[in-house]
Structure formats: C-alpha cells, structure tokens
Length: 286
Ligand code: ADP
Ligand code: ZN
Image (cartoon, rainbow, N blue to C red):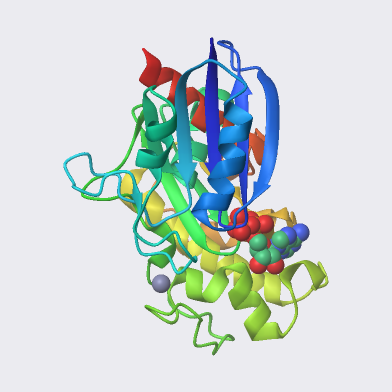
C-alpha cells in the first residue's frame, strides 16, 4: 500500500508516491496547464499504484471549509481553467480513497513540523516568497484554518523610508506580496530578483518587509520556528539582513528563540510541500 502526494503549484505539479515510512518511491513533475491536460498526466502516474490515500497541497486561493458547498475547489484564481474548479472532486472521481486537502504552504508547514526544521517543536510558520507570498501555520500540531485558510502575504506593511514603490498587488497595491514577492522586485528594478547583485542595496529593503511580516506573525501566534522558502529566499544573504531588521523592529518587546534558530530556511529544502502532502495523506488514511 502506498500514499500519494500532490504539490500543486501554479507553474508545476509535483506528484509522488511513498511507502508507509514516507520514503519516496517515485516522483514526477508535470507542467500546470489546463486542469484536463494536467490531471491526465497526474492520473497516468498514480494509476500505476494501489494508493491508500492522497494528500494535496494546492496553490490558492482554495476552499478548505468542510461545511462549504465548494469545499475542495480552487476558487478565485486567474489561472485559465482553474477558477472554481473542483479539484478534490476530480481526484475522488478517479480514486476511491480518502483525500487530504490543504494549501501548498500549509502542507509545507506540516512537512517541516513533522520532518524538517520544526520537528522538535509544537508550532511553526512556513512562508514562501516566490511568485506570490503565502504562509501556513502549525500550532499544537494542527494546521490553522478558520473560515478559510490564512493569507499571510496580503498583510499591510509600511513602505521602507527609501522605497516609494506603490506595489503590484491587484487588490491592495502595497501589501507585503505587492511589495516583496518576485514580480514586485522585477517591476521595481526592471530586473529579475535572481539577476540582482547579492550586494545590491535593495536586499536591505526586501529584508525590512519580510522582517515586518515576521514580527507581525510573532506577535499574533508566538510560533517556535519561522521557516522561509520560495525562490526569492534562495538569496541567502537575506537571512542575516532579516534577522537584523527583525531585532530592530521587535525592540526586545517579546522573547523569541535565538534568531539563528528562529528564522531559518526549510530543513527539507525543496521537499517540504510534497513531504507534507504525503504525511497528510497518511493521516487521512488512519
Ligand atoms: P512559485 O512561487 O511560482 O512556486 P518560485 O518560488 O521559484 O516559484 O518563485 C518564483 C519567483 O522567485 C520569481 O519571481 C523569480 O524571479 C524568483 N526567484 C526564483 N529563483 C530566484 C533566486 N535564485 N533568487 C532570487 N529570486 C528568485
Ligand atoms: Zn495584496
């Protein structure tokens, strides 16, 4: 018996099958096109295995409210074909097994909580800074969802004194995502984030926004670990800059773990999301 995991991203789907000890037996990466085309390839992969349960960590926004008529749907995405798409329904229509359903970042937070940087803790936040910004939280071992899932990227943060950029979020302009996700960097500097010099002054501005967000999350949830992933965080020089700005903004108001162990990159590197999806599948199977 195997578990199936789907890390459904806006650019690509990673599908994996693991044994009961969560060792990945096989994985594939499938480009995200229309639901029909993408799922055809997903089915071709999983059809080879006898699955006990499937876990999905999906790009959003998605409906995770079990009392909702549209539970299991991808909701208001601009991605062609995926708006109001019954993702869980499509998977369940093919495989008669329990399906765990959550956001990509909740799954990543769960993966890090069980097998990564937060495995010795009861709580953590996983934040991705990539094409967008999103976060998932684990508290006392549980994923935190309420009426919907958190939208940690769309919080308000004050502009840096030297950054007049108006932001790119279509809903809020200069929210965190509008100021600090990859496309915001590209629009502001007319250069992709990965092409900027590691010593560019801009990184201090980027760190200031991320640190403000981390201070806010700390004040609200007091988690034990803050894990930062996503393409932009491949810029490792950001970590010391973020810790420095965090310390200044926090101004010793609340106690946190040592910042070297509090603000960290994912222990599972790029596998937090798929690992979390497999773990959530197993929980659903019990
Ligand atoms: P996605 O969010 O689509 O899943 P990523 O996390 O890779 O994918 O995010 C893509 C964004 O991250 C792009 O805006 C890109 O410019 C930026 N990015 C990717 N790699 C790097 C890098 N090494 N350094 C800085 N920015 C990067
Ligand atoms: Zn926004």
